[in-house]
Length: 100
Image 1: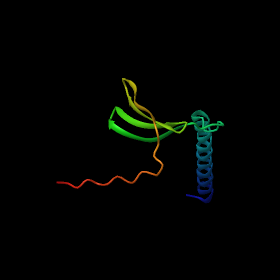
Image 2 (image 1 turned 120 degrees about the vertical axis):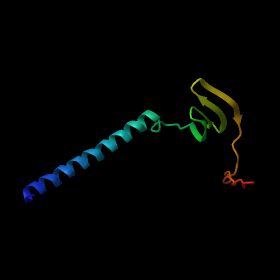
Image 3 (image 1 turned 30 degrees about the horizontal axis):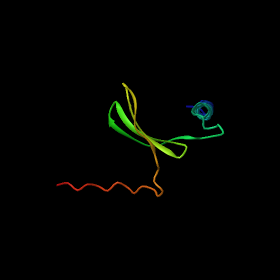
Image 4 (image 1 turned 90 degrees about the horizontal axis):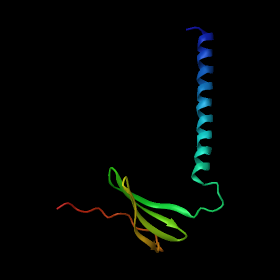
């Protein structure tokens, strides 16, 4: 491999990495615009979500200082409990269950 070939390879590698970085920045901007994070009010937030099975999950959604427990599945979404008051203090970590 000659010096010219090595230099050409290095320049091509730098160009490809620069294009990948530029594409990453553009995709992040597009994602931010689509998710509504650039708007004036951020009233809606997913606090926590857990998978029940591969096709079903539950989520706690906070809107206007109220929590709503929602079951999300392929058959549709179901509100399990609405207008829950969020806890004042942060929740403690899960305590591991000892095996019997």
